[in-house]
Length: 103
Image (cartoon, rainbow, N blue to C red):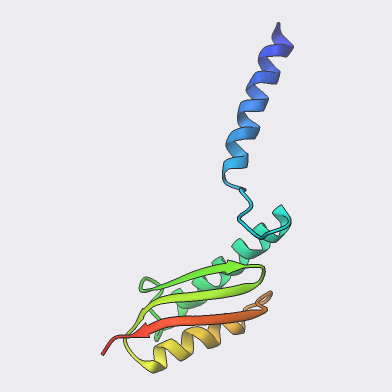
């Protein structure tokens, strides 16, 4: 009985932890998902440290090493700087810059 309760509890914990590790469409491994999440975090951290780029106004998503930037920038300088910071991040294979410059 005790081992059955422990097994059920463990299964519940594993299912809860799996929710945060869902592999998205077109990704082949959980490892790629973790790598992409790490890249996204590193890019966002660079934005937060940079005085030109607004980390709050620009969204970052990563899929298989390709970073997708979207949102709004105050100037072309900010848009270009965001792309440059993303490209300089370890693990980034490519950057799609869809940031719109507000006029």
